Structure formats: C-alpha cells, structure tokens
Length: 312
Image 1 (tube, rainbow, N blue to C red):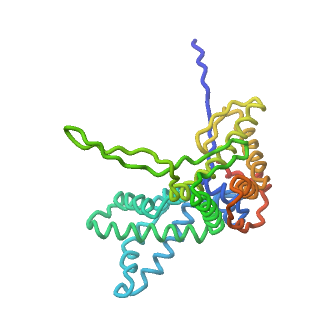
Image 2 (image 1 turned 45 degrees about the horizontal axis):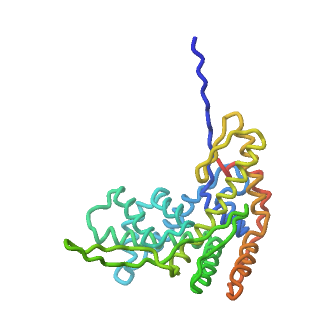
Image 3 (image 1 turned 180 degrees about the vertical axis):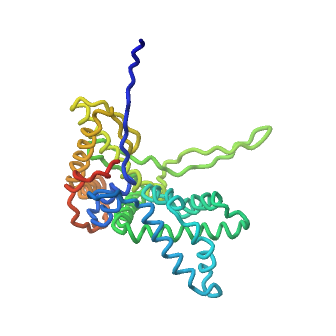
C-alpha cells in the first residue's frame, strides 16, 4: 500500500472586487448591496443587474422612431443579444480605467461571438451604442463609485499639470510613484535605412497620470487587503496564497480564512483612507489646490463580517 500526500487548496474570490473597494470607500448602501458587502440569502450578481438595466434602456430606445433616432434600429438589433456575458468584461474593467474605445472593442468581440457578422458597419455602430449604454448603466447604479473615480482623476490632473508625478503611500506604508512620462521619438539614419527610436522624456504625461491613478490607487488598496489577510493568516498558523482577489488556503482552514479576510477588510476601511490621501497630497504638493472630497453614504462596514458572499 502506497500512502500519497495530497494538499487540497480551496479558494475564495471577491465579488467584482474593484467595485467592492469603491463601495467601501463611498459607504454607499445600494452599491454595497450590489457587490455583496451585506448579508443576503442569494448572492447579488452585479453583471446581471447591469445587463438588466442595459436591456431596459434598449427596450426604451427601440420604441423610438428610427427615422429620427438612429439608436432605435441598433436597439432592435441588440435587444435579444443582451446578457450577462455581453457586459461582464466592461463592468469588470470599468473600475480599472477602461475607456469607451476599450469597452467598444470588448463588446464588439462578444457580438461577433454571438453571430453578428453580416455587416461591418452595423457591428461597429452596434458596439458603440452598446458600450455607451453599458457605461451609462454603470454610472447610474454606481454613481458614488464614479464620483470617487472622478475625484481621484481630478487630483492626479492637478498634480501632473504642475509637471510632477503622482505619489502616495498605501495604508501599509508602501510609497508609490506613477512613472508615466511622455516619450520622445528620434530618427537615426544609417547607410541602409532610417531607425525610429522611442525613449522616455523627463516631462510627465498628464493624460496617463490622470487616467492611471484611480485604478492604481484601488490596486494599492486591494493589495493592502491581501497583505493584511496574508499576515493575519500566517499569525494564525494558516497556509495562504493569493492571486489578485482570489485567496487560497487548505480546505480545513477555509472558514478561518473567511473570517480573517472579512475582519481585515473592515479594519482597512475603518481608517479614513480618502482623508489620509488628501492630507498626504496637501503635504507633498503644498502649492497646489485639490478638489473637495466626494460625499459619502452611511453604510455600516460591520455588515461585511456577516456577509456570506463577500468572498465566495
């Protein structure tokens, strides 16, 4: 008889984790419920919720006169193709700075998968329309999150417009600098051909500094949550591994890890993160004026401790 040692890891994933962090930052009750920060019998599915809202908008548009409203024809073409899969990638990447063009290409690929291949112009127009409706639906449901994203981007623009890179410190004390600078193009003539060389210049890239800061800041928060969880698991004698918002441990320790990751999320967001960030900016860039903090709701973070589908 041969004895084989087998290590069985189980993992728990966040529920649209980027939006979970924004919901905690904004303390918005509706957003918190949409991404499972509160206890409920069945898990909330934000992708399906957005798909339903997109479908409702398209039904409304399809009833318009196509001779006066071009969206009516596109809505009629797309109504039967709207589902969770169509909007999922765009919703997932919205908190990480997806642009309209990026959303359009994501949805275009899904439409091609669904068999919409007859007319290139129709596919392009339909993807543009569906991307706009999806982003609009996201803005309606996650209004507080969008406000925080805009505030972060506005702060970064203030800094970058002063020809400085955005710097901040994570809740765990890690200093971070965005390295985005403009590039310079140089042509080198040889006996055979011209070579085009690109190199980074000294001037900061204002657009990249602005668009990259919201997702980078949220990544610094989800990374802090993972590290806090990892350290607490180590102290509790648990083996831990993690990839982005997927936390792993042995099957026998899953319940303990579940408890720890919830406690650490509450601990992380019990500190005034946005206030600390603004204060950090004011100290690091004393000559600049930053916009006021966005308003926040009254969601009680303690609800996370009892939410079975927060990480599931």
